Length: 110
Image 1 (cartoon, helix red, strand yellow):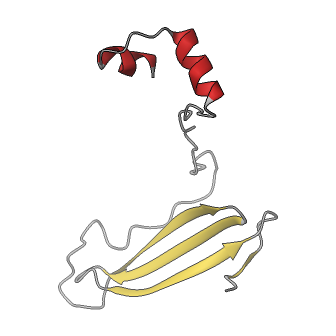
Image 2 (cartoon, rainbow, N blue to C red; image 1 turned 180 degrees about the horizontal axis):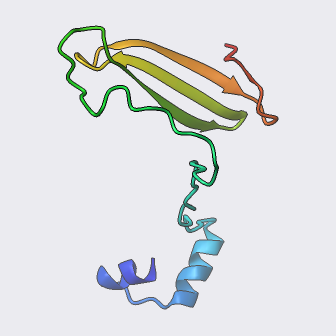
């Protein structure tokens, strides 16, 4: 904030900016912490690559792809799972699943 104010022509020191922000209830936004969600440190077998990196199959409806997205909410985590054809990228279905703090999965209640 101090650097930005000085760049715009307002002379202000760190302490003055800190006190002014505190008086006005303004808080600095902290840097978001990196969270690693992949655990590769295991001795489990990896799944075979049945597609062999060929994402344009000769026939339709032969290769599907799936993706999962984690959405943080105030109540816990919401998982969005999408399934689509690899040939057309057409979305077949999307499912939202709610998980509680203890980790059990249950359908999202509306």
